[in-house]
Image (tube, rainbow, N blue to C red):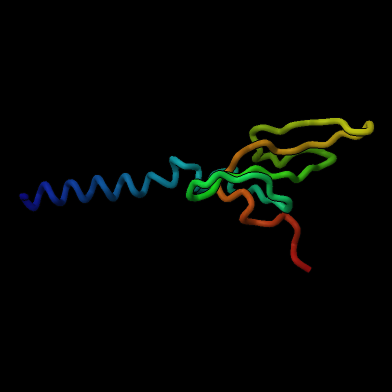
Amino acid sequence: MRPQVLLATLAVVVILAAALPLAHGQGATPSASLCCDNCGTCTRSIPPRCTCMDTSPSSCNPACKTCDKSTVAGRDSFQCKDRVANFCQRSCTKAA
């Protein structure tokens, strides 16, 4: 194989590898600011894409795309229904 072809192929592979995390939502996106105390279900993919069972009486995190509002016993509750890569990796509550 010619060195020029090998170099061009290597450059394409490097560019694709650099773009891959951005295509899967692992780059610096608003969803990266999400955190979770009560993890729900996760996929078996790598990285796992998870839902969060946390609820809030006021609203969802601004980075949440699908916020579900429910009313139980006359009280509103909001829960983010997004399935996000590594959602449960970071806890919202600081350890004491």
